[in-house]
Length: 570
Image (cartoon, rainbow, N blue to C red):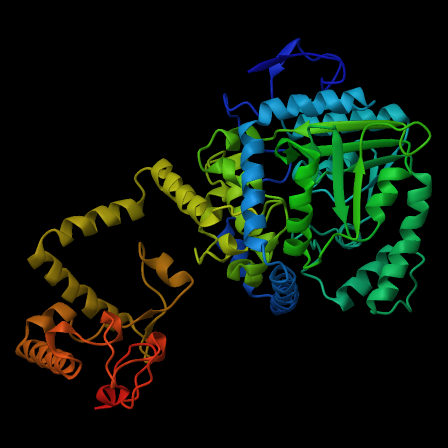
């Protein structure tokens, strides 16, 4: 689908008269490599191994994620209709994605009608160029920023720095990360990998007025950052923000935050530039009724966000005089066209999946390489940027950064099926990789298993070799290629002296099976014969009725199985 160029819609004055509309399923370009932060430089296994060796990092992550998990469970447990809210959120997001091209045009029209200007960016390079041009038109060499995942994704701060423009992060955690020359490691709590003493050192070294006597009390640290930022709020004429939601019905943008820095950035500067992913659009203003309940409880365990800011275009005499909205595609079209990947665009950036993920809790966000860490990042980055942009693309390892335990699906407030997406991406990687040593090994194993005699011989040979490779403690810690991958992250037990198939075919195995059959017959007889009288069959037996069926017979019925526990002891 193409759209005609209209005032306020183009990225620059030289744009062609027609261009693809972001949100159109075809063609589906991935975010191009080389710009932004949708892939790292190191494969996940190698980066994770380095993170696991950092005891301080693991301690910081364990304490922080544990605290957030407990608060979230308490906050969501207060609502009797929490599951219904999740259903509503999932349905609203699905509707918005189904109608995305239509809703984006509606948002553009409403935003423009109220005095704003809309810009369309295919990728990170276009978005960075648009923002740079808008800042330069103001004559400013500085901007203040509200925490924004979209601007991190496109690498805006680094791009502005190369153009001689300084970006001041105003969120406390983002400020800490910026002053340390670090990268965020969590969607919601960017400095989650830092403890108080580390933060104290960063602020003391990075804020000239903090002084060497700065303590590690949170209130004192916040006061030092507040004093440092106050001058920027009052003097810098340009602000850059993200947006949690864009309302197509009214052209309204919404930002939720906890510190008040966002409110300062959204109201004090003369020019406000918002960079928003195209998937953040929702149809109606009343849809916020659902999302403003789901987001704070899932993100911070709060009943509502301390600061919820909404603005609609330009209001004479109040707030910014110029308001711009940059609608960012950067691979979202590719995800939208994907049958499973489109579901990842429903993410509301609450980070609940990170806080329950056992992998993230142990390695943190930097191991993922991308702006988006944790389970959502393990699917979103490949869907947006692809997995095979280079010969050794680190994104292809991200779908394996999971135990597939399903905790992320249970925690997601909009029911994104992350485990299914992870499995699908693994399948794609395997198919696109073609004939790998692993695939050839599996084919050879299949051929052996189809021949019982050959399989038995191979099993015996492998067991002997494995016992020879074992340590004295009975564990195998290192296997040669192509099996080396199995022991890089886990030990393997030594195989038993006798395989089950051999034991089953032996006289000893046959005798054991006969004895087990006789014991089963005896137990069935004790519980009412072949009919199996007992709670499982709906019969009231004084010796077997369990509490699950409303009986507590003198025979000591086991509530879990409904039979006499003394029989098992015998």
